[in-house]
Length: 432
Image 1 (cartoon, rainbow, N blue to C red):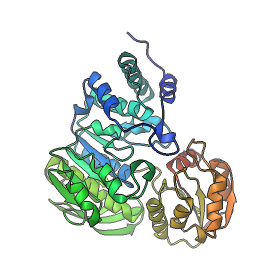
Image 2 (image 1 turned 30 degrees about the vertical axis):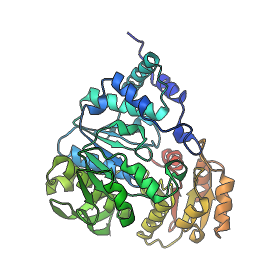
Image 3 (image 1 turned 60 degrees about the horizontal axis):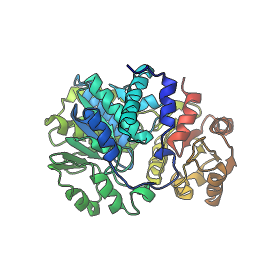
Image 4 (image 1 turned 90 degrees about the vertical axis):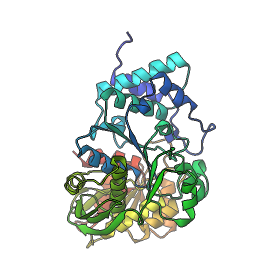
C-alpha cells in the first residue's frame, strides 16, 4: 500500500504541474480532453457516479453554483460542489454541502491521482488534477448530485467530462478572448459545448444574435431568461435583495437573498430554474425561501467593514466592474469610494477602470498581487491616471489596503477589486 501523503506533499505535487490559470495568455497546446478522459477511465469514471449540474458563463457562474448548491441541499440532498478559483486555500474548490474538503481527505485524493499519473504515463495539468480529485471525492462520498463550475469556456474545459442533465450558461461576455476567441459568437460557441444530448439548457444570456449558437448545440429543451424564467422584481433591502422569481412551474414572491447587486437576482433566477429542471418539478416555496436566505458568496461584493464601508468584490472584467459600480450606488454613500485595484495581465486596465468609474473615486490605490499573471501596480496606476483618476501606487495588497483605510473617511467606501486574487490577498486581513 502506498504511503499516505501529507497536505504539504499534495500541494507540492500540484505545484509541480503546469498551471494554465497562472499563465499570462493563450493556450500553449491544442485543446484536448483526452488526458482527463483517460485518467477518469482509470479511476472507474467517477464523473458518472452521480447526476450533475454543469455551470458556465463569463460572470456569475460561481454565485449561481453556490445558490444552486443551497437549493439542492435544502431538499436533504448531499451536494458536491466544484468551483474555481479559490480565495485562500485550494480546498475551497471541493466542497460537500458547502463545507470544503479537509486537509487529510484532500491529500489522500490528490495522492490517488498521482498514482494514476505514474501508472498511466499521462501528465495532467494542475486544473485537471483538481478536477479529477473532485470527481473522485464526490464518488467516494457518494454525493447525491454534483454542481460543477467550468474553469474557463466549456467545450475544452476539463470539467466537460461530466455528462450533466442540466447545462447552465449564465451569460456571454468578452473575456479570455485570447483563448476563447475574439467575438461573442466565438465565446458562445465555446460555452455551448457543455450541452450534452438530452440535457436541458438553462440560458441566462439574452442576446438574440447568440441564440442560434445555443440552438445548434441541440439541447432537449432550452429555458431562456426573461422568457421561461426570470427575476421580475429585484429591489434593494437591508442586507441584500428582495426578489420575485418566476420559473416554468412556479412563482415565488418577496424572497430575500442576502447578496448585494441586482445581478445576483438574475443569478438566483438561473439557479432556481436549473434546480427545477434537475428535479423535473417546481421547488416548494418554503424550500426556496429557506435556501436563498442562507446563501453566502465570499469575495462577491462581500461587506467586511462599516464606517468606512469596506467591500471585497472579485470583479475581473469590464462587465463585472460595471456591476460592482452599480452595486456601490445602492448604498447612497455620503462620501466617495476609495478603490484598491489590482488586475491580471490580458485585461484592458483602462476599460476596467472606466467601468469602475475610477475617475469619480476619492483615490485609486493601484497594487499588484504576488501572482504570475499580475499586472504591475505601475501599469494599473498609469491607466487610472490616463482616465483622470487620482492615483497612488503601492506594491503589495496589504500595504495598499492600509493606505486606503488611512485615506477613507467614515462616510467613504473602500472597494477592493480587479481580481479574485487581489481579493484573496486582502480578505484574511479583514475577515477573522
